[in-house]
Length: 182
Length: 242
Image 1 (tube, each protein chain N blue to C red):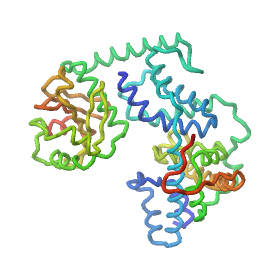
Image 2 (image 1 turned 90 degrees about the vertical axis):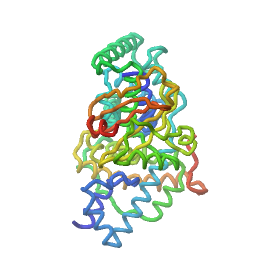
Image 3 (image 1 turned 180 degrees about the vertical axis):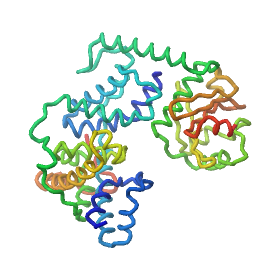
Image 4 (image 1 turned 45 degrees about the horizontal axis):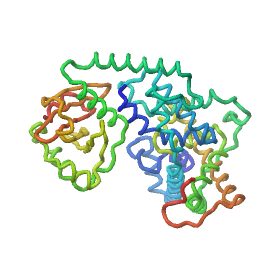
């Protein structure tokens, strides 16, 4: 793979990969390491142009695997059977709250969501992958992705409400752009 | 389908509309249009999803991450934290060299090294789905490219400076700008990359054809431009354009 094509690949995907990694790993430095490690694996496995069409899915899958390999499974990685049912209702105030919060507070709320839901939910909000591609990336059935999205969104709305209320991170809404994360 | 089932499905429908062509959502979307309560729920859910996506896009990677990735891959800098050892980077560099050599050896014979790299760049750009806005001036060019009787090798009426100035997507190859315009012919999408001929003096004038994975490409020179067309429609479809 030429350096131009590798640079192209990095430019196309590193920001979205970092956002995904940050939601998983929580610490910016760990997220950066995960992204670097992912591109290193791409390079060392000798992926060429023939695989470029599938690069996006491959990169997200590899980053997720690296994350899983890099941490010990803890009690929060529970099975679906252990989870409470999702609540699908979305109130108008939920929408308003999400629009008013700053990006850092939203990411903090996202990081409160159980990991089993957080990975598909972050990929969904990145809007880079379809539900079918998310299923392929996380190596779970499509129905499982839909279920985890439903339940993850319910957890996220609750976390957003806590974040906005308890930590006072609601900021004045001054148009379409929220305050950027520092 | 109950409304609860429809909500379950529609919860996986991206707010940016990229799932509009997915037939799996069809019945649930139709039900949301027919049922006011479900429709109102879907509107709120999409607004919430769009707000979350917008917030996530505001998260920027730390300064230097991109450069660290590229520097590591070039095997020219000290590895970043938690990267493998320098010995691994030497192996990586050797791997790159072998891969590049193999790639060149397998490429169709007459293409120059620069035309190969440019075709690879254009195919990769297409494969990465980075296509963006084309700006106002691109409309006329798109229309001319889409005309069934247009033979592109005869020359393109493309003013690169005007295209760039009006917002046409521009990519950089070896320090030179290429504008990218997408167009349709016979139901197939084609991606046209146009650079100034003077920027690529070593490129051959005749068409050079390339096939990689599901993509085909052709590159050629006209009076003022170097042009690369990329498509999934196949080599014959591209040859038909010329």
